[in-house]
Amino acid sequence: MTAILLQLVISGLLLGGIYALVSVGLTLIFGVSRIKNFAHGDLVMVGMYVTYALTVATGLDPYLLAPVVVLLLFGFGLFLSFALIRPIQGAPQVAQIFATVGLGLVLQNLALMMYGADFRSTPSIISGKVLRFAGVALPASLLIAFVVAMVVIAGLTIFLRLSLTGKAMRAIAQDRRAASLMSIDVKRIDMLTFGLGTACAGLAGALLAPVFPAFPTVGVNLVLICFVVVILGGLGSVEGALIGGLLIGLVETLSGFFLGSAMSQIAYFLVFIAVLCLRPAGLFGQRGAETLGS
Amino acid sequence: MGRTVDRFAALSLLLLVLPLFAPLFISDSYTLHFIWKILFWAALASAWNLAGGYAGQFSLGHAAFFGIGAYTSVLLYLKLGISPWIGMLVGGALAAGFALLIGALTLRLRGAFFALATIAFAEVLRIAVVNMRDLTGGAEGLSIPFAPGLGNMMFSGRAGSVVLVAALLLAIAVVTLIVERSRLGYALAALKEDEEAAEALGVDTIRVKLISIALSAFVSALGGTAYAFYILLIEPSTVLSIGMSVEMALMAIIGGMGTVLGPAIGALLIVPLSEYLRAEFAGSFQGLYLLVYGAILILMVMFMPNGLMSVVRDPRGTLRRLTLRRRTERGRKGDA
Image 1 (cartoon, one colour):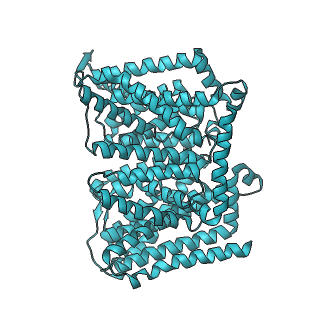
Image 2 (cartoon, rainbow over the protein chains, first blue to last red):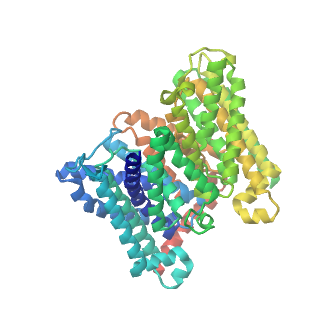
Image 3 (cartoon, rainbow over the protein chains, first blue to last red):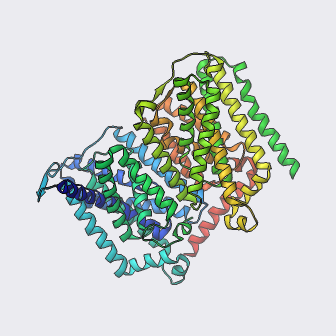
């Protein structure tokens, strides 16, 4: 029993690492720009399809192509920020919600038109390889995704604490007006943040592509999980996204084992609803943050 | 001022009475189906509008209310032989109850957070329905054997169903007009404008929000019953999908939230467009119509957040705002 439990916990943490990586982009964008990006999961989907397309076109391993995917998605994020996000900054609530909902519809159906509704899996030499350590099975692709996620999150944390741009981001997150009075170029930082968040989504997509097949609506479930993670961890908090991601990963695998797969799907929505209703600022966030965003 | 508003209301109602008589002049089955679709989406968008448009509660989980209406009436009919006319009221009451539960639990949430919470509730319901296979038929859903008869809400031609959704649309419009002109309507207007200020002025914002979402859920559920007994098949992947919720909201937003006619105008524009795109590009580009929906939604909320109704009501003002905005943007760029 302890062996099974250990395996479940490890699997949950591995899964949670991926959730954390996807969520960190969302929480960054929310924290700095107060944008609730409903299309964030669809950006991960774009990352998966770009990885798939590049792998098919070049014949290289998806892991080697990940940096290219990240750069492409960073550029795409900058473009989106300029064309879509900047105009809705400070716009009525309805614009802030439905502009990114519309973006999600566009991206999903673009993928549907280009690749159809079939599942597309991206092959890698590592797919299917499993490491065994003290009786615990560790799928190599999940392990790589987890390690990369941890490195990226650690890197982001250091970047936010030590670099001037990172400090500017935190300043805007605290008080946008005051930051702009301190001659921080708020628009430039907003754009950079969105690019960075999209790049995180792209990296997550590249790491997910060899693990899960891509299909046009794969992002819909993912974005809901991300919001669960982000709200659980406290909006705008990178460390919170990490802890939230790991927690949700654990909830999913443990409830899946003990309650069945149907209940595990329901479980994280129930956790989500409970957190939203009881402590909308998240477990580690500041109280009142949820009204900041509205 | 009051008189022009009332003239506008009378005109709106007159326009919405017309579809009731459509089957008198049209007998072509395909055309009637097309009209049914427009009226159906107009009714659903109007239902969403009661909560989303008037109270600013941007729900993305209205499929739950719609689905409760569809499943309740179908189950009562299939298992107990109860007429859908009664089933639809039971479904409406259940949906309103569910809405009150959601509303009570999410009182503190605003904007995007409320939207997220409603998605979560709708997803819980969808997953539950998929997994309660014995009762709900699971992912395959439930099909209704065709047995025409007024008591069964099934009609041998399409005319009966068209009249039914036309009546539903009209009823929702009447409810909307009554709400708009009542004390509740003024409270809602205040709430939408500024929640804190409304509270300070003595508006019971909690009560007002709960009433509007319960009303909206009730009429959405009626739409669910009308859908089920016309299409004769309900599946969780359509009836309870996020896509369903998004489309309801989208039509209302494009047409104009917080107005009686707006959602109907949205449906009148979007449904023919989607039918055209689907017929023209069927097979080759299966997602094209939804892609266009998304693009229109983005452009509308960016440039005309009050929807097409703002053009109808104040054409010159809208034009002025659009050009003014472009000019100030250019000016800002000049400064930098």
